[in-house]
Image (cartoon, rainbow, N blue to C red; front, side, top):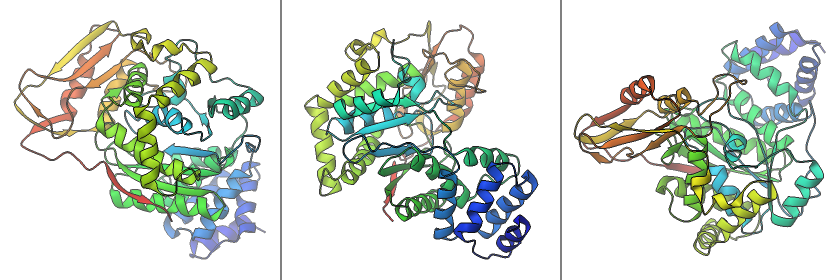
Length: 433
């Protein structure tokens, strides 16, 4: 088998066999196939697409390029959730204890964030003492005992994906549905879950800017999951403005606590229920999505979800008293209000740019070696569709420096006040096949 023949075959729109895809992925991972041939193949896939079977075969070739996590020692159906990213996306902090409170095992592997704020791992480390460095035996024990644990990503998972993604990044082939879908799904499948729920974002703060593109990606990923024996569902959700009010690590932990108490932002609660009901349904704990949602609402009402969060924190070395005393979370030295300059209605909050404003404060990483300031960030006081009067605060800046002119400029440039507008739709639909 020769790589040049496979490139030619895909260039001409023909279908690659599983054996041919494996030859490409294994050879590229081992360094036997050079970058220039791999980039030619990526460009051929970009223009000629792949069938559902090719996408599934590509995903499994990447899964098998490195280690896989065996979670068979964990009792029950393990359901994982993945978001395609966003600003103020606090869903994992809410969903993990919420779903675990229904005796569904949540065995979560999380990475550190590179972008607007930290990843789930960084956010949890805003709680004093909390750590994600767990031995596999301890991870399994905690999930079997209390149905919840979060561990840092480790091992040599999907090295083919890491190598291919770096190549796509510099060859203008990132934005390809089969390549994006197989990249995301290979990591989720290698992480060992039985079922996967996907939150596919659309809008200014998302990778997929249009609803149609987001739906296409969701269908591709759900198809891959179901094709390789993982029950998979997806939600298409809006990221044209930040989710919830908080953007920043400690601020998002506080917002997660509020949401588990039933006092969180309505959009964050709505999305967590939409994703959570799919997780409960795929775990065979409910016979319908509607029944699953009622079960989730009940564990918020009766306080079991909040208690589960405390147990989770304590199990991983954190101080559970932050749940009742969130003032123990890291606090910024300066709170600076951003007043509206005119009367009107908030017509637009450009999610990714507001995320960048939080990163300028130190809430996120510019490079993977950047230090995060867990205390800083932004609290939105208005969302799209809200009326505002001149002088009223649009945003509260939580900063550890007095001069925040760069952040103020970024906020004013990206929150537009206009005439009456409707709040955006939050959930555009669900994908089950």
